[in-house]
Length: 359
Image (cartoon, rainbow, N blue to C red):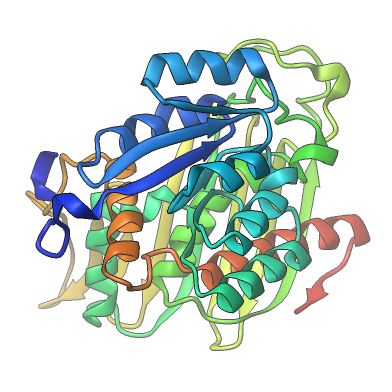
């Protein structure tokens, strides 16, 4: 593993976790199966998907012995230590809760759940069973985000009070899976893409409590044929938003401006978290700190950062595995992921009501 992120100080060859995968779509094939497959303390024991052809193909490709179309049957037969939930959003909570109740640790893909009620049920089950529950906000595991967290936590920015979040694609509507169906995914650009940058921003500023959300959204481009580098989506069944604008207030006086899109007529796509504090400000992608010093306006950026060559998926996998083996909390805690779900839910409710929502 590049940059030495597999720390085996507390993990021996006897500490292999039996891991199962639920859902065999793109995120499972592209990230979780490869990352867990190459972790030295993991055995990929079983995989489950309701589509038999898909689960058979994945089992063959990744040499996984246990093959199921019902994850509850997999839980009963495989004696798993942990599972990764890679289903569409509608099925996150049922699968995660069932796994936890079977005594199995869970890494669930983002978002945590369709709504706060489901998220709270997942959190309560994890607390009741004492099993690890983490959510796949892999941006937190990027080297630049971890470096930004060290800068903020050291107090270099002073008291942070203004945050700008941009998760903007000029064109980037998923053309595969169920992404454009609200009844399955719960929403579009915000719940799929915006949650990554929202979670990143919240984590960097210490997850203050949100108290008010005001938002608007649109579906102007997703409901008609359009140019899209990711291929033509099913615009006739497009029932989610392709653009969101929101303002969030927190109980410590911090304000957040948030913009998100799958499709928007802008010059270029942007992913950025900008944080302003009383001593300095910071952009995260790429990392830059801005301040006034010695009667000058100055900025600095790193020449090198620890772990910059590491894959965020591998770092996320290792954090989850070592959290279980070392009996510690994972970097992404479920109560923090629930806060993201609560804000996203408030964004949707505010847009529908046409007014601010108090939390």
